[in-house]
Length: 140
Length: 206
Image 1 (cartoon, chains in turn red, green):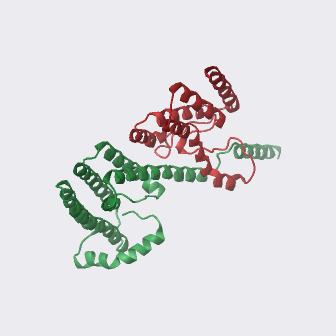
Image 2 (cartoon, chains in turn brown, blue):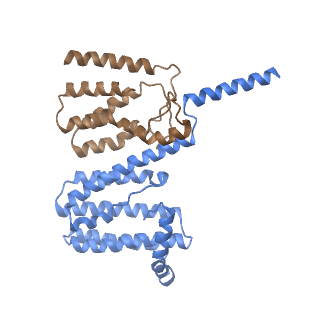
Image 3 (cartoon, helix red, strand yellow):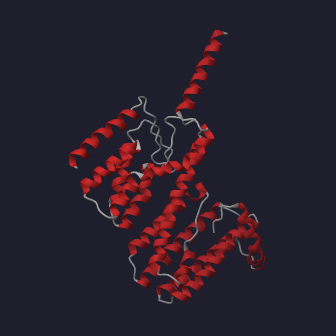
Protein backbone atom coordinates (compact mmCIF):
# COMPACT_ATOMS: atom_id res chain seq x y z
CA UNK A 1 0.00 0.00 0.00
CA UNK A 2 1.21 3.51 -0.68
CA UNK A 3 2.80 5.57 2.07
CA UNK A 4 0.00 8.19 2.09
CA UNK A 5 -2.56 5.51 2.98
CA UNK A 6 -0.32 4.24 5.80
CA UNK A 7 0.19 7.79 7.07
CA UNK A 8 -3.52 8.61 7.03
CA UNK A 9 -4.52 5.36 8.75
CA UNK A 10 -1.87 5.95 11.43
CA UNK A 11 -3.09 9.54 11.92
CA UNK A 12 -6.66 8.25 12.23
CA UNK A 13 -5.85 5.71 14.95
CA UNK A 14 -3.57 8.12 16.81
CA UNK A 15 -6.51 10.52 16.87
CA UNK A 16 -9.04 7.85 17.85
CA UNK A 17 -6.74 6.32 20.49
CA UNK A 18 -5.86 9.79 21.82
CA UNK A 19 -2.17 8.83 21.87
CA UNK A 20 0.51 11.11 23.25
CA UNK A 21 4.27 11.27 23.85
CA UNK A 22 6.43 8.27 22.96
CA UNK A 23 3.35 6.29 21.85
CA UNK A 24 3.05 8.59 18.80
CA UNK A 25 6.63 7.69 17.90
CA UNK A 26 5.86 3.94 18.18
CA UNK A 27 2.66 4.44 16.18
CA UNK A 28 4.47 6.05 13.25
CA UNK A 29 7.42 3.68 13.47
CA UNK A 30 5.28 0.56 13.22
CA UNK A 31 2.44 2.02 11.19
CA UNK A 32 4.44 3.87 8.53
CA UNK A 33 8.21 3.81 8.82
CA UNK A 34 8.46 0.04 8.97
CA UNK A 35 8.35 0.52 5.19
CA UNK A 36 11.98 1.64 5.41
CA UNK A 37 12.88 -2.03 5.08
CA UNK A 38 12.50 -1.39 1.34
CA UNK A 39 15.90 0.32 1.44
CA UNK A 40 17.49 -3.09 2.05
CA UNK A 41 16.21 -4.23 -1.33
CA UNK A 42 17.70 -1.32 -3.30
CA UNK A 43 20.99 -3.09 -4.23
CA UNK A 44 19.06 -6.17 -5.36
CA UNK A 45 16.60 -4.07 -7.38
CA UNK A 46 19.45 -2.26 -9.14
CA UNK A 47 21.18 -5.57 -9.83
CA UNK A 48 18.05 -7.13 -11.30
CA UNK A 49 16.50 -4.15 -13.08
CA UNK A 50 19.11 -1.40 -13.33
CA UNK A 51 17.52 2.06 -13.31
CA UNK A 52 14.33 0.88 -15.06
CA UNK A 53 11.09 1.48 -13.20
CA UNK A 54 9.45 -1.87 -12.66
CA UNK A 55 5.92 -1.89 -11.30
CA UNK A 56 4.88 -4.56 -8.81
CA UNK A 57 8.46 -5.48 -7.96
CA UNK A 58 8.53 -7.16 -4.57
CA UNK A 59 10.02 -4.52 -2.28
CA UNK A 60 8.75 -6.06 0.92
CA UNK A 61 10.79 -8.12 3.37
CA UNK A 62 9.71 -10.48 6.13
CA UNK A 63 9.66 -7.43 8.42
CA UNK A 64 6.21 -6.71 7.00
CA UNK A 65 4.85 -10.21 7.26
CA UNK A 66 3.04 -11.88 10.16
CA UNK A 67 6.31 -13.64 11.08
CA UNK A 68 7.40 -10.29 12.53
CA UNK A 69 4.94 -10.69 15.39
CA UNK A 70 7.63 -13.00 16.79
CA UNK A 71 9.73 -9.95 17.64
CA UNK A 72 7.12 -7.18 17.82
CA UNK A 73 5.01 -8.80 20.56
CA UNK A 74 8.00 -9.36 22.92
CA UNK A 75 9.17 -5.82 22.17
CA UNK A 76 5.72 -4.48 23.09
CA UNK A 77 5.79 -6.52 26.32
CA UNK A 78 9.23 -5.09 27.10
CA UNK A 79 8.10 -1.53 26.39
CA UNK A 80 4.80 -2.13 28.21
CA UNK A 81 2.67 -0.68 25.44
CA UNK A 82 0.21 -2.21 22.95
CA UNK A 83 0.91 0.48 20.34
CA UNK A 84 3.60 -1.34 18.24
CA UNK A 85 1.43 -4.45 17.85
CA UNK A 86 -1.71 -2.52 16.94
CA UNK A 87 -0.09 -0.20 14.41
CA UNK A 88 1.91 -3.02 12.85
CA UNK A 89 -1.40 -4.89 12.41
CA UNK A 90 -2.95 -1.91 10.61
CA UNK A 91 0.10 -1.77 8.34
CA UNK A 92 -0.17 -5.48 7.66
CA UNK A 93 -3.89 -5.33 6.85
CA UNK A 94 -3.35 -2.54 4.33
CA UNK A 95 -0.45 -4.40 2.71
CA UNK A 96 -2.45 -7.61 2.46
CA UNK A 97 -5.00 -5.76 0.32
CA UNK A 98 -2.33 -5.59 -2.38
CA UNK A 99 -2.13 -8.12 -5.18
CA UNK A 100 1.48 -9.33 -4.94
CA UNK A 101 2.61 -12.71 -3.65
CA UNK A 102 3.04 -12.98 0.13
CA UNK A 103 5.09 -15.34 2.27
CA UNK A 104 3.57 -14.84 5.72
CA UNK A 105 5.82 -17.16 7.70
CA UNK A 106 9.07 -17.14 5.74
CA UNK A 107 11.79 -18.27 6.68
CA UNK A 108 10.03 -20.69 9.05
CA UNK A 109 7.64 -21.88 6.36
CA UNK A 110 7.62 -21.64 2.56
CA UNK A 111 3.85 -21.20 2.49
CA UNK A 112 2.90 -18.69 -0.21
CA UNK A 113 -0.22 -16.67 -0.74
CA UNK A 114 -0.31 -16.40 -4.54
CA UNK A 115 -0.65 -13.18 -6.47
CA UNK A 116 -4.19 -11.97 -7.04
CA UNK A 117 -5.28 -12.34 -10.65
CA UNK A 118 -7.00 -8.97 -10.67
CA UNK A 119 -4.76 -6.03 -9.94
CA UNK A 120 -6.66 -3.96 -7.39
CA UNK A 121 -3.59 -2.20 -5.97
CA UNK A 122 -4.33 1.24 -7.35
CA UNK A 123 -8.04 1.01 -6.57
CA UNK A 124 -7.40 -0.20 -3.00
CA UNK A 125 -4.77 2.49 -2.45
CA UNK A 126 -6.85 5.37 -3.74
CA UNK A 127 -10.07 4.26 -2.04
CA UNK A 128 -8.26 3.86 1.32
CA UNK A 129 -6.75 7.35 1.00
CA UNK A 130 -10.16 8.87 0.11
CA UNK A 131 -12.17 7.06 2.82
CA UNK A 132 -9.64 7.57 5.64
CA UNK A 133 -9.00 11.13 4.49
CA UNK A 134 -12.73 11.93 4.69
CA UNK A 135 -13.04 10.39 8.18
CA UNK A 136 -10.01 12.40 9.35
CA UNK A 137 -11.45 15.62 7.92
CA UNK A 138 -14.71 14.90 9.71
CA UNK A 139 -12.92 14.25 13.02
CA UNK A 140 -10.69 17.32 12.76
CA UNK B 1 31.18 -20.75 20.11
CA UNK B 2 29.77 -19.81 16.70
CA UNK B 3 32.00 -18.09 14.14
CA UNK B 4 30.57 -17.60 10.66
CA UNK B 5 33.41 -15.65 9.01
CA UNK B 6 35.94 -18.18 7.60
CA UNK B 7 39.02 -15.94 7.96
CA UNK B 8 38.21 -15.16 11.61
CA UNK B 9 37.56 -18.83 12.22
CA UNK B 10 40.98 -19.73 10.76
CA UNK B 11 42.83 -17.15 12.87
CA UNK B 12 40.91 -18.18 15.97
CA UNK B 13 41.69 -21.86 15.36
CA UNK B 14 45.38 -21.02 14.97
CA UNK B 15 45.49 -19.19 18.30
CA UNK B 16 43.58 -21.91 20.13
CA UNK B 17 45.55 -24.79 18.61
CA UNK B 18 48.07 -25.33 21.50
CA UNK B 19 45.23 -25.49 24.04
CA UNK B 20 43.22 -27.86 21.86
CA UNK B 21 46.31 -30.07 21.50
CA UNK B 22 46.66 -30.11 25.26
CA UNK B 23 43.06 -31.22 25.82
CA UNK B 24 42.85 -33.64 22.92
CA UNK B 25 46.32 -35.18 22.76
CA UNK B 26 47.54 -34.92 26.35
CA UNK B 27 44.25 -35.46 28.23
CA UNK B 28 42.74 -37.57 25.44
CA UNK B 29 39.43 -35.68 25.54
CA UNK B 30 36.88 -35.60 22.72
CA UNK B 31 35.06 -32.33 21.81
CA UNK B 32 31.87 -33.58 23.48
CA UNK B 33 33.75 -34.39 26.69
CA UNK B 34 35.19 -30.85 26.71
CA UNK B 35 31.63 -29.51 26.17
CA UNK B 36 30.38 -31.52 29.16
CA UNK B 37 33.30 -30.32 31.30
CA UNK B 38 32.55 -26.71 30.30
CA UNK B 39 28.87 -27.20 31.15
CA UNK B 40 29.68 -28.67 34.59
CA UNK B 41 32.03 -25.77 35.36
CA UNK B 42 29.26 -23.43 34.18
CA UNK B 43 26.88 -25.08 36.69
CA UNK B 44 29.40 -24.37 39.47
CA UNK B 45 29.40 -20.70 38.45
CA UNK B 46 25.57 -20.66 38.52
CA UNK B 47 25.62 -22.13 42.05
CA UNK B 48 28.18 -19.56 43.20
CA UNK B 49 26.12 -16.67 41.76
CA UNK B 50 22.94 -18.08 43.31
CA UNK B 51 24.62 -18.17 46.73
CA UNK B 52 25.66 -14.50 46.41
CA UNK B 53 29.33 -15.00 45.43
CA UNK B 54 28.71 -13.43 42.05
CA UNK B 55 32.23 -12.08 41.47
CA UNK B 56 33.74 -15.53 41.96
CA UNK B 57 30.90 -17.00 39.90
CA UNK B 58 31.80 -14.71 37.00
CA UNK B 59 35.45 -15.79 37.12
CA UNK B 60 34.41 -19.47 36.99
CA UNK B 61 31.98 -18.60 34.16
CA UNK B 62 34.93 -17.24 32.15
CA UNK B 63 36.66 -20.64 32.44
CA UNK B 64 33.46 -22.30 31.20
CA UNK B 65 33.30 -19.81 28.30
CA UNK B 66 36.89 -20.56 27.42
CA UNK B 67 36.17 -24.31 27.29
CA UNK B 68 33.16 -23.51 25.12
CA UNK B 69 35.63 -22.22 22.54
CA UNK B 70 38.02 -25.15 22.94
CA UNK B 71 35.50 -27.92 22.11
CA UNK B 72 34.60 -26.44 18.72
CA UNK B 73 38.27 -25.87 17.96
CA UNK B 74 39.17 -29.53 18.68
CA UNK B 75 36.26 -30.65 16.49
CA UNK B 76 37.39 -28.49 13.55
CA UNK B 77 41.13 -29.09 13.83
CA UNK B 78 40.87 -32.88 14.22
CA UNK B 79 37.90 -33.34 11.89
CA UNK B 80 35.61 -34.53 14.69
CA UNK B 81 32.65 -32.29 13.86
CA UNK B 82 29.31 -33.98 14.34
CA UNK B 83 25.62 -33.10 14.39
CA UNK B 84 25.35 -34.45 17.95
CA UNK B 85 28.22 -32.22 19.05
CA UNK B 86 26.57 -29.15 17.54
CA UNK B 87 23.23 -29.94 19.17
CA UNK B 88 24.91 -30.67 22.49
CA UNK B 89 26.69 -27.32 22.39
CA UNK B 90 23.47 -25.42 21.65
CA UNK B 91 21.61 -27.21 24.47
CA UNK B 92 24.43 -26.61 26.97
CA UNK B 93 24.95 -22.97 25.96
CA UNK B 94 21.27 -22.01 26.07
CA UNK B 95 20.68 -23.87 29.37
CA UNK B 96 23.68 -22.25 31.02
CA UNK B 97 22.62 -18.79 29.80
CA UNK B 98 19.11 -19.26 31.19
CA UNK B 99 20.41 -20.53 34.55
CA UNK B 100 23.00 -17.73 34.81
CA UNK B 101 20.48 -15.01 33.93
CA UNK B 102 17.97 -16.27 36.49
CA UNK B 103 20.63 -16.74 39.19
CA UNK B 104 21.78 -13.15 38.64
CA UNK B 105 18.18 -11.87 38.59
CA UNK B 106 17.60 -13.64 41.92
CA UNK B 107 20.84 -12.21 43.30
CA UNK B 108 20.23 -8.62 42.19
CA UNK B 109 16.45 -8.72 42.72
CA UNK B 110 15.36 -7.67 39.21
CA UNK B 111 12.13 -8.42 37.36
CA UNK B 112 12.06 -12.00 35.98
CA UNK B 113 9.92 -10.84 33.03
CA UNK B 114 12.91 -9.08 31.45
CA UNK B 115 15.01 -12.23 31.94
CA UNK B 116 12.32 -14.34 30.22
CA UNK B 117 12.22 -11.88 27.32
CA UNK B 118 16.01 -11.94 26.95
CA UNK B 119 16.12 -15.73 26.91
CA UNK B 120 13.27 -15.72 24.37
CA UNK B 121 15.18 -13.27 22.13
CA UNK B 122 18.28 -15.49 22.26
CA UNK B 123 16.22 -18.57 21.33
CA UNK B 124 14.58 -16.64 18.50
CA UNK B 125 17.97 -15.62 17.13
CA UNK B 126 19.28 -19.19 17.53
CA UNK B 127 16.38 -20.54 15.45
CA UNK B 128 17.71 -18.74 12.33
CA UNK B 129 21.42 -18.68 13.21
CA UNK B 130 22.53 -21.51 10.94
CA UNK B 131 20.33 -20.46 8.01
CA UNK B 132 21.42 -16.82 8.09
CA UNK B 133 24.96 -17.58 9.30
CA UNK B 134 24.79 -14.69 11.72
CA UNK B 135 25.11 -14.58 15.49
CA UNK B 136 26.07 -11.37 17.31
CA UNK B 137 27.53 -13.24 20.33
CA UNK B 138 27.12 -11.00 23.39
CA UNK B 139 25.35 -13.49 25.61
CA UNK B 140 27.28 -14.84 28.59
CA UNK B 141 30.31 -12.77 27.71
CA UNK B 142 28.33 -9.55 28.22
CA UNK B 143 27.90 -10.48 31.90
CA UNK B 144 31.51 -9.37 32.43
CA UNK B 145 30.11 -5.82 32.05
CA UNK B 146 28.58 -6.35 35.51
CA UNK B 147 31.79 -4.88 36.84
CA UNK B 148 30.84 -1.49 35.32
CA UNK B 149 27.07 -1.36 34.65
CA UNK B 150 23.91 -2.70 36.32
CA UNK B 151 22.49 -6.15 35.59
CA UNK B 152 19.19 -4.61 34.48
CA UNK B 153 21.01 -2.67 31.77
CA UNK B 154 22.96 -5.72 30.64
CA UNK B 155 19.88 -7.92 30.37
CA UNK B 156 18.07 -5.18 28.39
CA UNK B 157 21.12 -4.87 26.14
CA UNK B 158 21.03 -8.64 25.54
CA UNK B 159 17.32 -8.43 24.67
CA UNK B 160 17.71 -5.58 22.18
CA UNK B 161 20.86 -7.07 20.63
CA UNK B 162 19.15 -10.37 19.90
CA UNK B 163 15.88 -8.86 18.70
CA UNK B 164 18.01 -6.69 16.39
CA UNK B 165 19.96 -9.76 15.27
CA UNK B 166 16.71 -11.58 14.48
CA UNK B 167 15.52 -8.63 12.37
CA UNK B 168 18.83 -8.68 10.52
CA UNK B 169 18.57 -12.44 9.98
CA UNK B 170 15.08 -11.97 8.50
CA UNK B 171 16.46 -9.37 6.08
CA UNK B 172 19.46 -11.52 5.13
CA UNK B 173 17.26 -14.56 4.42
CA UNK B 174 14.64 -12.53 2.58
CA UNK B 175 17.25 -10.99 0.29
CA UNK B 176 18.80 -14.41 -0.31
CA UNK B 177 15.39 -15.89 -1.12
CA UNK B 178 14.55 -13.17 -3.60
CA UNK B 179 18.00 -13.37 -5.21
CA UNK B 180 17.67 -17.13 -5.67
CA UNK B 181 14.08 -16.97 -6.95
CA UNK B 182 14.80 -13.93 -9.12
CA UNK B 183 11.66 -14.18 -11.23
CA UNK B 184 9.52 -12.17 -8.89
CA UNK B 185 8.75 -9.13 -10.97
CA UNK B 186 5.74 -8.63 -13.15
CA UNK B 187 8.08 -7.50 -15.91
CA UNK B 188 10.19 -10.65 -15.92
CA UNK B 189 7.03 -12.74 -15.85
CA UNK B 190 5.41 -10.92 -18.72
CA UNK B 191 8.57 -10.81 -20.85
CA UNK B 192 9.17 -14.46 -20.19
CA UNK B 193 5.58 -15.35 -21.07
CA UNK B 194 5.78 -13.22 -24.19
CA UNK B 195 8.97 -14.96 -25.32
CA UNK B 196 7.45 -18.35 -24.53
CA UNK B 197 4.32 -17.56 -26.57
CA UNK B 198 6.45 -16.26 -29.45
CA UNK B 199 8.62 -19.37 -29.35
CA UNK B 200 5.53 -21.63 -29.40
CA UNK B 201 4.05 -19.65 -32.31
CA UNK B 202 7.34 -19.99 -34.21
CA UNK B 203 7.33 -23.73 -33.66
CA UNK B 204 3.73 -23.99 -34.83
CA UNK B 205 4.58 -21.86 -37.88
CA UNK B 206 7.37 -24.24 -38.84
